[in-house]
Length: 89
Image (tube, rainbow, N blue to C red; front, top):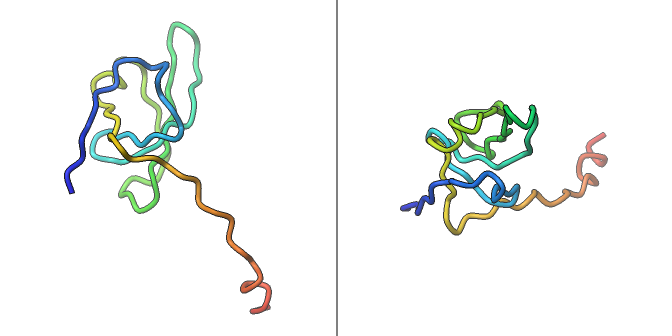
């Protein structure tokens, strides 16, 4: 499967529903923090990725390492019915 990667040049276009590839890890944008002069952008790896912990990128690292995966969309997992777990108790 070949991924079409689009370089991220504008931080205002980051979206939590899009999938990004950063250093070979598929991730989703979680939010930003820091100051106006020194913003930090938070990312969470998608399930089944080698990297498990969330990570931060500053603006310069984001511009050089972050690519949007064209056509991939992150959908939150559906809420599962817990009735099976309750039956086991």
